[in-house]
Image (cartoon, rainbow, N blue to C red; front, side, top):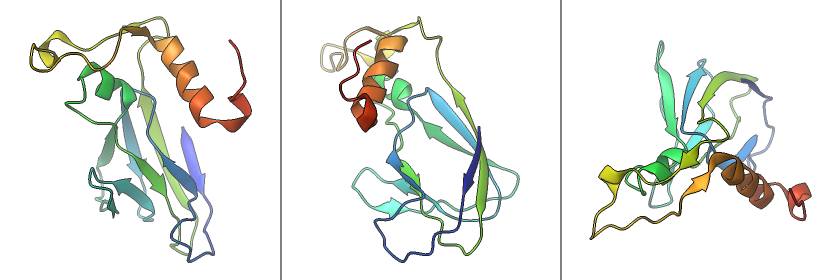
Length: 143
């Protein structure tokens, strides 16, 4: 997906070009140009601006990785604040399971001391649950 974030004229730390969110995919590969703006939330709540390193991809883990790994690997909350003075562009590739796939904790991530935190679910249902929870116009949507 080609992403464009126009320059923001605000100094408000709560103003985002793309609000904080996690990806509802398994993994995301992000090709970025040299304009900063990506903000990643660390587990203790602090926001970090990852450096832009030429010739590399930034990798975000998504909600499905979190679920499959039984929270061993967490999905990465992130957003964009483009106060760079110029437009920002990036290209994201979201890798997700087939919509009919059954998603459950991997056996290697579950034990007697660490039981599954998530019930088995079909990816399609997880997508609808995610959209219904995160998009106001879908709050009362019934599939």
